[in-house]
Structure formats: structure tokens, C-alpha cells
Length: 162
Image 1 (cartoon, rainbow, N blue to C red):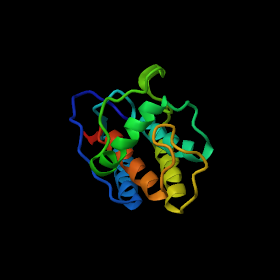
Image 2: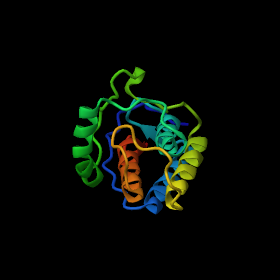
Image 3: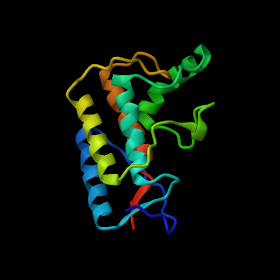
Image 4: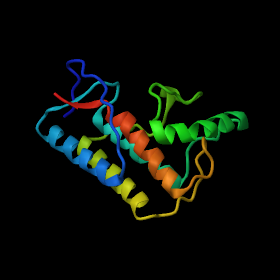
């Protein structure tokens, strides 16, 4: 069970591989089981896991949102190399989407972790994405992995040990 009874700062994380994120997810699962998992953000751990998994799954199953205008896509595309290297910025919201994003279903943490591991497994085994990113367009498989690792760093940084 995730609680947020006291402020816990955002952690700066860096994942270099899917193995790194799986290790972090195992730690989060243990903290959750021992009731030592805390969140410093607005979402539960389950919402974080569901959101991260959903954005990986959309590349395989289809994105439920439209692409932004071409000039926004162009701008985002120019920012992609920096994001892949340095990480994703906090607080970004998708205009016109209630809550600023999608896919943050509130599910139990253990179910969210299982779903996220399954989604990362699809990337790990090299399953080819059927859909281009609405923001970044066509991406190499390696860049998709790196982008999802950066996305996970951002959101998992809100989960901490009590």
C-alpha cells in the first residue's frame, strides 16, 4: 500500500538497461509488500506503473491520442536527442487531455509492476512497434527503449522508501 503521509523528495534515477529497471521494480515491490513505499507525487505507485506500461503498449497496440500539429512534432523531434541523453522534464502536460496525460489507471502496485515488466519484455525481445510515436514519429527500436527508460526514471523517481 502506497501512502504519502510526509514529503519525500523526487529521486534522480538513471537506467542504462531494461535489467536496471527490472531491478528497481523488484525493490519497489519489496517496499510495497513491507508497507515502506512512499510517493512524493500526485499518483499512486499503481498509477505510475500503469502509465509507464500504457505508453510502451501504445507503440504496439495503437495510441489513443492524435498527433500534435506538425510544428509541435518538429520541435519535439529536435528535443528528442537531449531527452534520450539527459532525461524527460517534470510537469509536462499534453494540451487538451484531462489531467495532462493518459494511461494512469489506479491499479494495485503489484499488478502495475507485472504489467510494466511485461511491457518492457516486449521491448527487450525486440518486438517491432506497429505504431509511430504521435510526438516523435518513427523511432529506432534502441531509441524507443531509451525513451521508455527515461520516462521510467521520471515517474519512478516519485517513489521512495519511507
